[in-house]
Each structure stands twice: as C-alpha cells, then as structure tokens.
Image (cartoon, rainbow, N blue to C red):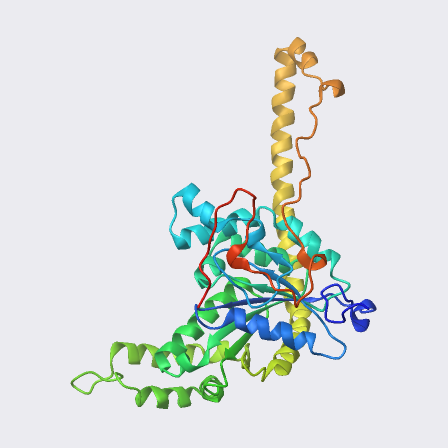
Length: 376
C-alpha cells in the first residue's frame, strides 16, 4: 500500500486542482530559525487532511544537516568544500560561488518544479543562513525572478522574536525587510518565529501605532546620553518609525512557533491571501516590464540589423567574389556540442520522507574524501 505521506503520493485535492502551487521563499537573519521553520511547515502540511506534501529546495550549500528531506538539494550539484579549495575562497565566498554555479543550472530546476506543479500545493525554498548572500547577489535575484515569473511567489521573512524586543533590533529588522520588499516587489510576510519563547504582540503594536514604539524607545536603556539628551540613534529611530508607518500598511505579520507548530494555519492563510496580491499586482507589473524590455530589445535588434545590412551592401559592392564565398553550406554545419546532461537531482522518487540520510558521511563521488563531524 502506498504511504500517504510519501513525496510521491498525490493528494486527492491536488490531482484536480486548477491553480498553480505557491512558491515560498524563506529568508531571514542567521539564527532566526529558517530551516526549523521549513521543517515545521513541512510537518504541518503532511499532517493536514488530506496530506499536502510540499516540494522543498535547499539552497544552502554549506549546511551539514537539514531537518527535512529536500526534493532538490544544492549539495547534490555543488561541492561547497571543493569550491572553497579550487577558488581559494573563505566561507562566505564559497557559499556565494556555489550559489552562482547552481544558478547556471536553474533552468533544470524549473523544469523539475513544473513537472510537479499538478501534484503539490507549495514549493518551499530554504535559503542560506547568510541573508545578504541570497538577497543582494546576482544569483539570488536570478532565482527569485525565475521562480516569480513561473509560479505565484511570496517572500517569508523569518524574524527571531525574542531578539527583536529591543527597539534598535526591531528597527534594523524592519529596515532590512523594507529594502527586500522594494527590491523583489513580491508579496511579503513578516514571520515572527519562536513565539513559544516571546509573544510577537509587542511588534504588532509597534507596527500599528508609532507612538507605542516611541514610548518603548523612550524607556529603553541607552536612549539618552550622560547629559540626559536623546542619543543620535534614539533620534534616528524616532524619525524612522514615522517613515516606516506607511511601509507597515503593506505588510502582513504572523506569529509562529517552529517548536510547537502554533500559528502555521495563520501563516498558510496569509500565503493564500498573498496569492491574490501576486495575481493582482505583481503579474501586471511583470507584464509591463516584459513588454518594455521586449520593445527595447526589438529596437536594438532593428538598429543592429539595419547596420549589418548597410555594411553588407557596401562589402558586396567592393568585393563581389568574397560575398559569394561567404554563403552558408549546410553540409559543413557543426554538430551541437550540448550533450544534454542533467546535473540537478530530484530525490522525490528515490526515498520517502521518513528515510534517514546520514549527510555527515555523504559522498558525491566514489573518490571523494569527506568526513564531516556530526553536529552537536
């Protein structure tokens, strides 16, 4: 009997669904709990009736262990340690270069995702722990744009709630979220994680009423200097909370606990609401940008073709014999060098979600010498 929780099992609701799956790009500061959040979201979707197993992509090449079974794992394609050795890079440079190399094969990833589009409701991308490597790199932008142009996409910005109770840390997170929102222009969900340790209600209050934030800022330690005057940082954050007041109106904030599973139904409801935002706002903007880009490219092509035809006419006039010798001969055409090898591995059909994989002893090649220490 087929395991209903298997990645191969097709939920009855998915087999006949008409809408595309939603892609969830999880990003956040290091230590915010992105991978644990993806693990709990995966478990939550498996526990639904009927089960709705997601399609998961791990994009962190340096992680030694992930608490879930990814369908596509960047570590199967790119060897992070070998990249560091070959290019003489440090840890962050190795992650960035590995992501760049993986992006060159991302068309294959999209093909595999599209093949599963009829049988899944969610495609989840778990990004590297170093947030700037994905959000501000060319490869991160390419992956985001490629996914967003194929599937309804939402950005889930995971926040470490206990560490955000300080007004300065909260403001830093909000500024970073603001910059990512306006860079991607995608539906955006603030996910306040670890609510089992600290409720996120204080953050909701600060976002809803800037006076609440200013009151908390006034009572915060270090808000005034030795002479009793507000510090520069205090004045700056007072001003910024007024600027971001408009920004908060375009955000959806939810609180979740990746330990207890609390709040994930609310998160999925926010994701479904973001689907409508994607269809009503992002798609029209995407089409306008594509039309503008195509028009610009066509103009450039027309100008180049006009220049080529003009140069060709002058060349024929000056050298008629050379023009005849330059004709195309189909018998001399070179064979296509593309061998069609597929480097991306879809592990959905190889194992079930309960199978244990000892990644600390993983080998990508027979001759590879890797002995990673077990975490913890």
